Image (cartoon, rainbow, N blue to C red; front, side, top):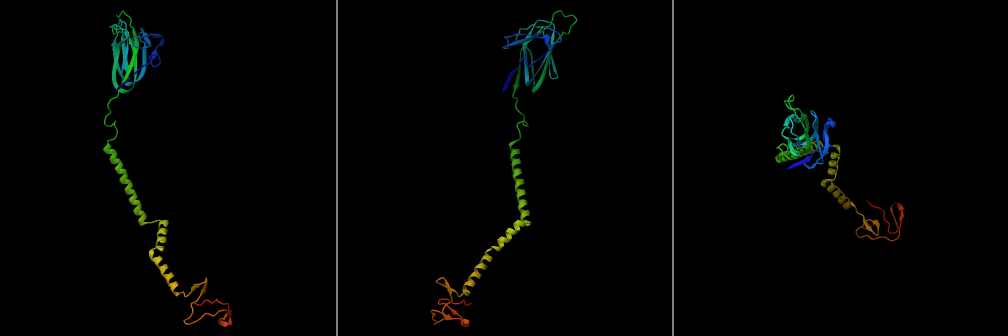
Length: 246
């Protein structure tokens, strides 16, 4: 695909000397303005971005030469053919990018004998930019290379994670050690010991709960005594109250 653009002869071109160039209306080449000169040594310069450029204009039959330079490449155009106002004066094709163009009106090679004056008119300058196919390097990395890079990153990440886990397992930090100690305290064996202790205490206790007041069991064949009874040491206790007997 090729894109193109047009150089604005009024804004994009520098003329030297400016007084040597004449500006007039132009419609033949679908442009609004035409610049012309017949002064030997007059020049014009411009910059464009693309890979080719075309200069349209006219020349009056003369003995002059038009020198056109694009970057470091110079071309001479003979103006003696006498073409019309919309003739292709110059075509250049090169590499895509920014380029500088300079043109100047030169005397003919037989400067000492020529009789006719030189005349040049520029009516249209058009540049083109072809979308050249990119090379393999320009298209970026090969998909296989990208996949290999991604897999390599995953492998490095897993290796780093495994190494970290190994180091933590071999040398746990203080917090990890404390957590392990707490876990051991709450192990099933420790819990079982607590249960056994509670059962043992339950078996050794001879207390029963009656009406919310702890009372020892009655001896075999014994009867409860209502009212008060004498306790050890001649102490009197209210009915239903019994001292704790271990």
